[in-house]
Length: 143
Length: 143
Image 1: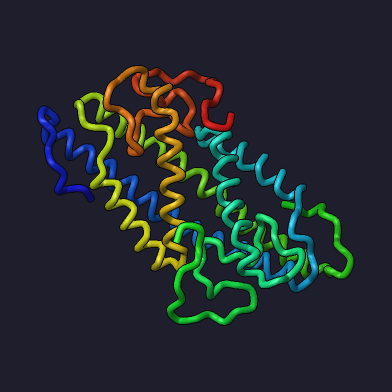
Image 2 (image 1 turned 135 degrees about the vertical axis):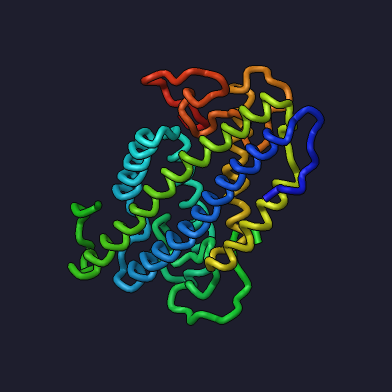
C-alpha cells in the first residue's frame, strides 16, 4: 500500500485514507487477475500439447469467434465495455501466439491463440514436452 | 462450447472431449477475468473522482512502481512470467489513460493510470459525476 505517500496540500487525511482503501481493493483484484492468468496459460499450454499430439490444427476460427462473442456478452452484463473485453482477449491471444515458435520447437501446426504450448507468460517448465526445471529463467515478451 | 466442431481426421473422440474440457476451463477463467476487470475499472474511476474532488495529482510514480514490483513478485509465485505481468498492468493502465480526456471533461490533473474517471473499458454511466443512464451505448477503445 502507498501508506508513505506525501499528503498533498488540502487533500486531508480522510481523502488519503479513502484513496488507500480503494487502492487496497485494486491491489486485491490485480493479485486475483495475475493468478487467474497463470492458470489460463497453463490450460492453453495443455491445449497446445494436445493439439500437437493429435495433429489438430492450431487455428480454430469458429472457436475464436465464439470466444469473442461470449466475452462481449459477458462484458455487457458486467457493465464493462465489450470493445475493451475483445481487445483484452486479443492481447492475451497475441502473447500466446508471439512466443509459440520459440517454444513449439518446430512442431508444425501449433500456433493459434488457444495454445501453442507457447509458454507465453509462463515459465519455460510448461513448454510442450519439456520437463520442468526447478529454477528456470522466466520467458516472456517483456523479460 | 465448441461441441459442434468437426472431427479432424485421426483426432479421435477422446482427444476432442479432452479439448472441449480444457476449453470449458479457459472459458470459466475468461468469464472471471472479465468480471474482475469490470470491478477494477469501477475502483479506478472512484480514484479518479476522489482525486478530482480533492485536487490530488493524477500521476503517482511511487505508487505505479510499487504496483509493478508487487505484481512481478506475485507472478513469480504463480509461475507466470513477471515480464508478462508487467506488460498486462501497462495494458490496463494505458486503456484508462487513453480515454480520460474524453471522460474527465476538462478537469485538470486527472489523468494517471490509477483512474481518471476515464470510463475506460466501462460504460459511460461510470463517468465522473455523470448519472447512470439505463441503456447507454458502450464507450471504449475498440467500440
